[in-house]
Length: 84
Image (cartoon, rainbow, N blue to C red; front, side, top):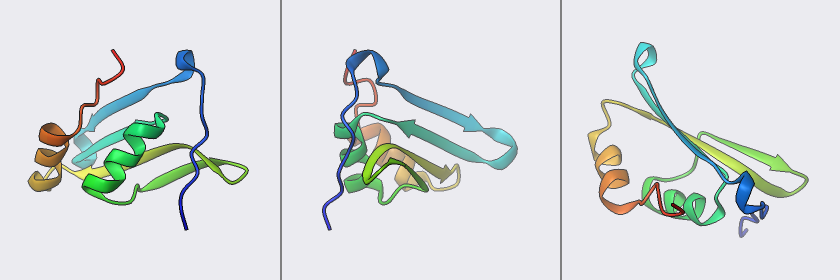
């Protein structure tokens, strides 16, 4: 089944990257459909998908800081700042 992403207005687009040191986690949240698709392809399914009706309105990935390969893929292959 193909995922459907909710289109949001440009002023509502956001990507948040947090390092949660207490839990040793890199947390990435985005509601940019193109970035969500790219992250899905490169590092896999998100930890949490936020939905409005049947459309995905945002996704969050939680990556252990010890998972160096996924973090490297994000840095090398994903432009987290693509809309600047």
